[in-house]
Length: 224
Image (cartoon, rainbow, N blue to C red; front, side, top):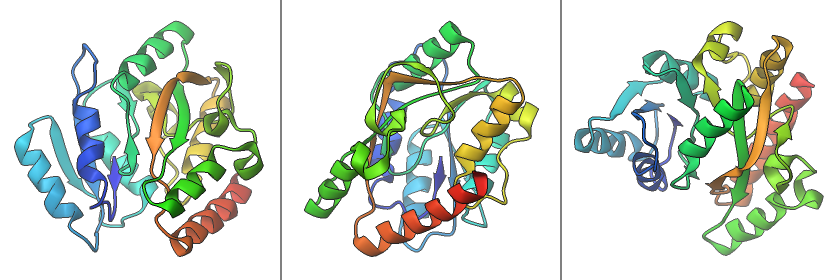
């Protein structure tokens, strides 16, 4: 989990991960950027409470660097990417691993189920789950299981990440699209399943939302 300025949601996000209904071993690597709020303090407290949590430093604060640092610090053969403002359902990891075993895919993902707390966030969430608002990508609006170009977050085989050399750190945004492109180019499969549904918290105000979509659109064009 790459984390930057996530004081508001980090504790809930971590608790959802640590209470997964998954029969195998779990660890959570928090890759902490130089935050302006209490994120680092909260991460340290959570790690002190549960030995499954590992905290590493991401000096740049950028997402692709944070992901690569966290992956390098992890120990298992399956890597589940999670964000600090995403809330996993209890069966998320189990559904991901079962889907991976059934399909042979290198990366599986599900629905980015935007849900807001404030009236502004709720309005944004409605747009983010509408084809009019965000287009027809299945990870936004749902649909049948199957092979796709990209998925939200992603659960990866470590072997696939090693095969393509990890995240490209020149991509400040859209690093998931770019990564999935390389996985497919290398002969791998990216697979969507509606069984995996992640609660996503939208940006809290118009300025933050505009900044997010401006940079997402800019970097998506680079990938395209």
